Amino acid sequence: MPRQFPRRPPRIVSIRNFPVWLVTFCTHRREPWLAQESVHIAFTTFARRAFDDFNIAVGRYVIMPDHIHLFVCGDHDLVLTRWIAALKQALAKSAKHSRGDGQIWQEGFFDHLLRDDESMSAKWDYMRENPVRAALVTRSEDWPHQGEIIAIDRA
Image 1 (cartoon, helix red, strand yellow):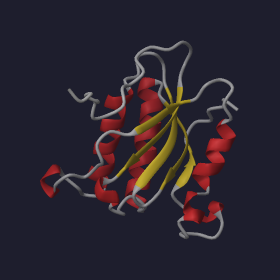
Image 2 (cartoon, helix red, strand yellow):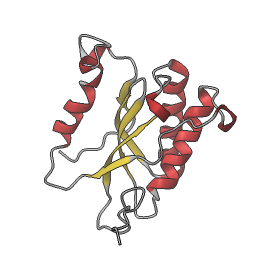
Image 3 (cartoon, helix red, strand yellow):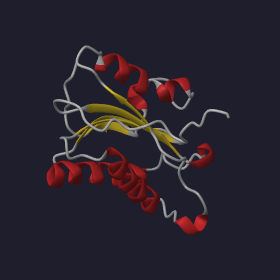
Image 4 (cartoon, one colour):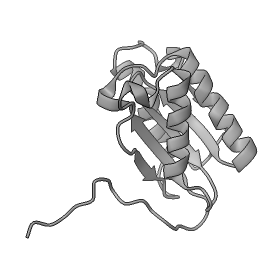
């Protein structure tokens, strides 16, 4: 009998200390609707509220037309799948998308748990150069849909 594989990679359930993740999620079929001011405002509003209400810190982030990269840190009560689902819902609403429009997001998301000895700055360098590699700007600092909500220092 062929070996069965899950549809998505399994989530890490328990770790020590406060985890920091690099998270990436994409629009369905990589539709390019994210890089707009209303989405950026909704993202920063959601992130600030997450910190104020739930002690979940969103660090540096880049919003590309069809995907988002971000660093996020929370305590042991953070259920990353639920938090990302709520973020996706807030962003879709800000762009006036609804489930009636069909599938909005690619299923799931990619998350990479940063270990103490990993270089967060190297991952940030990769993330912030995305708009340059995509030929959206010539200098990464010119991309308007990026920033940092809460400083997360793991470097």
